[in-house]
Image (tube, rainbow, N blue to C red; front, side, top):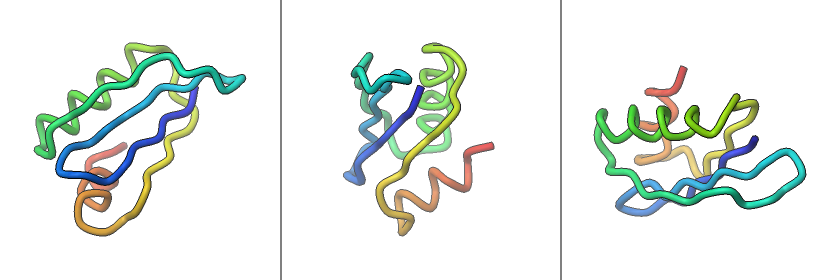
Length: 68
């Protein structure tokens, strides 16, 4: 499964399976709780083996810093 998100005032996340099929999309607030909710949501779809983040400034940096 892969994940990609766009940089906006919220985090928009999508789950893509190993052959590129879109499985789900969700928005998450830009807060420590929102980051945890996003990670929990990703894991609820199965093993996470790749995460893509658009941009690493401001919002993207905070998300990256909160990721294991």
